[in-house]
Length: 304
Image 1 (tube, helix red, strand yellow):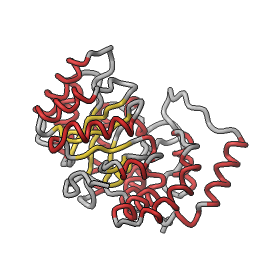
Image 2 (cartoon, rainbow, N blue to C red):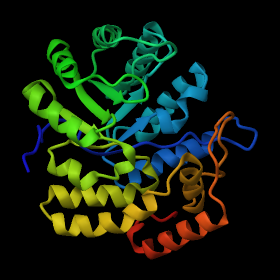
Image 3 (cartoon, rainbow, N blue to C red):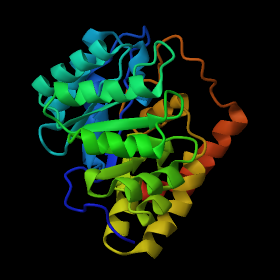
């Protein structure tokens, strides 16, 4: 396995906390601080906030800015902070990115604006403008639900805009796409990270990816898997990976928030309307509880 820029500053498990809400759907600031502390203390190598699983689309701009400021304050330099700045227009994302830079984040991540149908040339223009607007590394979230750039376009983009130097690959064929961009972009790209809840973490590492950005509810487990891989203990990493994977396959945002509740990290599992996610039925929860019990020794973080 050839490591891709192992000295690059962004490498490992970059945990994504959810946004905690009170039962009336207002921002739960105490739980926000708690989930940020958990994400760092559980071993994640970085924090990404607020992005899709953080329900950024139902947050006001004021809340998004407050969350970024709180994240920087709570993390306090212990690990890098990557701010999500996806917006509804180029100017919207750029404004959020400039605020995030002023707040002290280490990098930003964005999908193209998706309030309207867009074209490849408009996506490229957006990342040129975003890269020029901030003096920070920029992650391209190459997400199939927005506009996933083909490899030649993405390789040219990271060549032409020096600080657009990382990719989170979440297209329809994420593993193959990650390999293609690593090979095509060469030294122009400092790292490709995976998504999809670290469900393919071992394969991503073997392909030379720089890490993964999963939700942080199993941050202690995913960071341990990554650390073992980096130490050369692939057998040990795979043994843990194979035990946690069945549990991860049950994830949706409602399950994720409930797991945080059961781990004593946030107060309740409230999502902000509209959310369109169905909770598991009693049979689904029975299976999740069984799998959690089988993997209980892997959860090294305990509430003090």
